[in-house]
Amino acid sequence: MHKKLNGRTLAAMAVAVMTAGISAPAMAERIELTFTGTLTGSWSTMSCWGCEIPAPVEQLITPLSFSQTLIIEIGGAANISGTSVYEYPGLDIDGRDTWNVDGAQTMGQTNRSGIAPASIAPAELLSWAGASLPGGPAAEEIAARRTRMLTTYPDGAAPDQRRDVWDAYRSQTWLQADGSYVAQSVQLFHWMPYPVTVGNVGEALTTRQFVERLQSDFWCTGCLNSLIVNASTGNDSSSRNFYYFGELTAFNARVLSASAVPEPSTYALMLAGVAVIGMAARRRRKSA
Image (cartoon, rainbow, N blue to C red; front, side):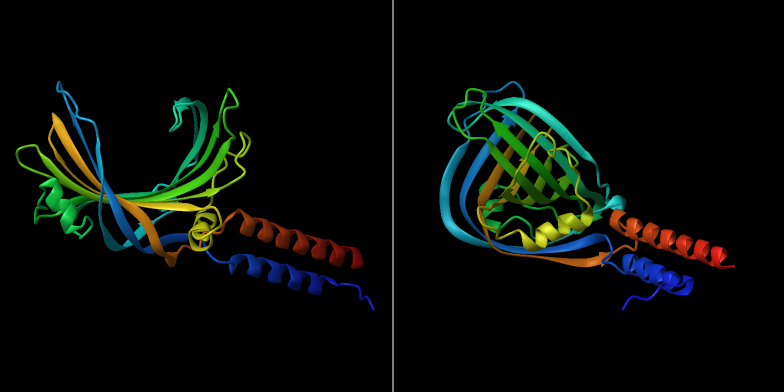
C-alpha cells in the first residue's frame, strides 16, 4: 500500500540523504605503507662531465630481506596534481619501435629539511657504494605517483601494452661543505593490466580511489611489483649510483588520518537533498 509523502516526510528524507553524504568515508590524506621484499640483484651507474662513462654493471647478490614503513601524505595539502599526458617514440627491450602515451599524476609530494637520518639503504649497499651517512639532519623527499601507460607498435610487431602503475618514493640527501653529497632512497612500484585508451589515459584519480587501489589491487591477477633501494655519492661534476632491486613479498596500506572535505560524489548527494527539500516546500505552499 502506497502512502503520499507529505512535506515533513520529504524533508526528513532530504536530511537523511545529506547526512549519508557527509558521513561517507572522508578523503584520505595520510597513509602508512608497510612492506617487505627480497632484494636479489644489483647494478651501478656513473655520470660525469667530460669523461667516458662506463657501461652499467649488473649482477646477482645473495638474497637480502628488506622491510620498511613509509608514511605518505596525499591530497590537496600535499601537492596533488592533475594528470599530464605525454606522447613520445621509443624502443622496447627487443629494439622494436614503439609509440607511447603516458598519463602521469602526482598524488602527493612532501619536501622537508632538518630530518633525522633514517635506516633506508641496507648496510651492505652503503658499504658497496663506499658511502657513510653523515650524522647531521638531512633533506627529505617523499612522494606518491600513478601513471597510465599505453604502448603501441606502429608496424604491428607486437600486441599493445596497457598498464596502470603507481609508485611510492622516499629519499634523504646530505650536502657537504665541499659541495659533495650523499643520498639514500627506497622506491616501490606496482603495475597492473588496465584497459588504457587515448580517451582515458588522462583521467585523474581522487585520493580515495588511490587508497582503494593500494589496499585492494596489490595482489591482483597479472599484476607485478618491484622494489629498488639506492645509495649515491657525487658532486657538481660526477656522481655514482648503486642499486639493489627485487620484488615485494608482503604489503599493507593503512589510512592514518583523513580530512572532512567532501568529494564530488558527496556534493552530488547534498545537492539531491537540497532539491528534495525544495520540492517539499513547494508542496506545502500549494496545500496552503
